Picture (tube, rainbow, N blue to C red):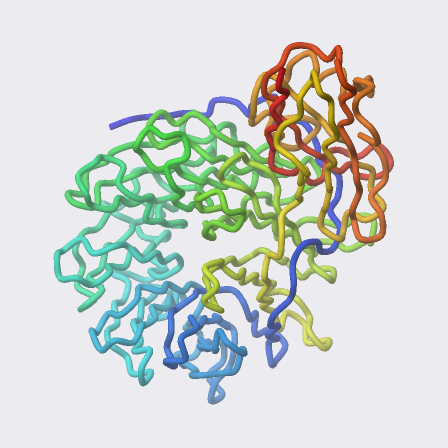
Length: 560
């Protein structure tokens, strides 16, 4: 078993990031609002697959505080068309107080009828013992139900689909019961591995410390031990490892249940492991990585880490000094920037937009898995929205790129307090630095023109072109990851001392968030040695704010 510990918040995390615009670089496709006050529409989200046979994946919304048929807080799950958002089917909580839909999982076809099915958690059901229910996507019938073992277990508070482990060809379900008392240890928590076909309990994993709340977050994380089976990550955000509530994530073998690795939080009250997602192998060592949120790290702002699955070392670390509950939700979302690696979302539901005087409006940030850059962000529209308290992603239109489902369960649509809202967004583009050529001769001379295009929310912001001969990064700089390795040229340009060959390397983005720059090399240039030159473009926020968006690095060859 590998034990990894983040003993301290790395100093790099102390750098702040300026506030975000309300939206940039994305397009709203659908919006769903809770029908009644207190519904909390959007507490659970999942992309289900093609239920109605139109070729587009469909999606599910959890509305756990809805009151169907006068059953107070029984909850409702709506399955909606990915093509146009229309309601396809409603699944109804079976008793008042169940809170059906507080967690959702999309396991694919459980009953082998060719139609994807859906699993929903009802953590309040059965006297707060909790329940997990599997429903047919074809006709909405209940396929199976599993109830928690004892009152207050809260089975179903967290769910994750797991690729088939028992050899029957059907996806399994990992279900958390963070309030369970295994071996008499109060609130230590458990996680149940359930057969997707029947709901039978295959394995129960147990927390070890009182009030650990093991099972609060779950994920299938790929094959950590190389045995060909998917492995399982379980968060225990209130685990004490020398200090109170540091939090822990444990990774178990999907094949045999053995503990493979443990990751401990960085500081007291960090609540590391409150949210978890599995990512691709980003560092090329053959082991997938782990995305972990710690919404109380830094004594309130929160943080999220991408950790090496093999060593536990942070590959990327994200933090914003003005945030509240940064990392309370995380999710993988497929490759959106075209680098072949699945990117990821971080939800910050209690983020405050101080410029607009919106408290707890929430915020969601999309990051590149390839180099840690921020690709896109969205801020909640109203105080108390808590945008980002639920996240899901999937390809709804068949173009090979995921759309983003973002929950704001405490939004007040139409004045309906805590009715909740779900927005479906398409990420349109990342910041672009586009050169007109890939090489220029120092002897013959020539000009390379650069087109800069940033998300529209950056219009009017300043920009800078930066370069390095040392190669691509990533490197953390002024609150953002830059895809350059710092060298003397980089630091000179950062200080505003540009080689004379650069024209308009700094300026202000126009109303469409665009700009142009040039590298004009005269014949017989005295520029230093030939070789590759890597460049990026960065936007900067007004009033001395930090880096905003960063373009992917491009390579220019300086030929003899």
